[in-house]
Image 1 (cartoon, rainbow, N blue to C red):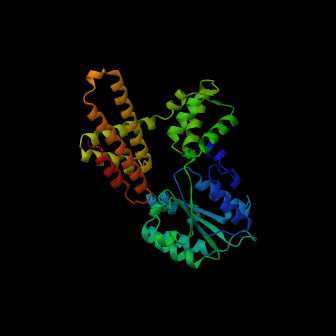
Image 2 (cartoon, one colour):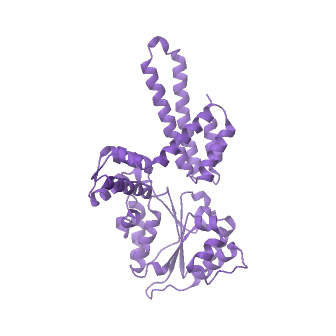
Length: 364
């Protein structure tokens, strides 16, 4: 898979996070590290950076021996089934104990063990999607962090820092990751991969690819790989906009559902709005920020269509000018409400509330 093939191996290879890399290179050089809280949007390089830090501290051969990566979403979704099937935890698994108790035992025992490398003074314990961990587990982690400071460093990665309890956040160096599409890093990364694979990526294809990736490097690389496979089947070396759209049908489905959410909001059907949000976020596991972005794009397209309709109609058919100005002010207010919702989502444990509040403003 291209995601792994082109995953950064060294800190200098991390794209779009210059300030974060600069801080961590100093720690790695001194062979030390504080507990870390890495927060930022999905696909911005948090996991890749942790593995690069491990290589910098321990070398390629010993990096994985001194790093335990726990994907919290796997534990939350599967509980004892995941713990039972994970070979690394077989010595701690006890059918008679609860999943929470087993998890605590794993963390507690790993944290106090000495590192494998002779020249290392501590190991790394990495929790990705840390906001998904139950609050009682997070409180337990706080105590383990205090007791095992000499033998282990804790790293938490999340897109929702508010989901990590203050007691844990305050014991970590907090580092913010910027979305890669905000800095141009995603464009450069995708173009570089296409060139390395001997492919020509048109400007339209790159723009569409970036649009659907929404700052997520992993998503962008996966779409590019799928488009490359489709191009290879057609014996083509150029990837155009149409080729990208062929492999993102699911994204078009989300676009349709965003349009349906807008229709329900404009129609005052609040129950349908809540059901639509729950289906996307809870059932299909679409991120709240992704839903917000899709709603924004759906609103923008609707504005464009209405604006085009106004241009096509004669002056005598446009209605009162005051009405048009009132609608323009209303749409401007909606954009402000979107910005407010975006801010609230960064510090919320229940994103549906804020998205539902946003869509309630869409009644004209």
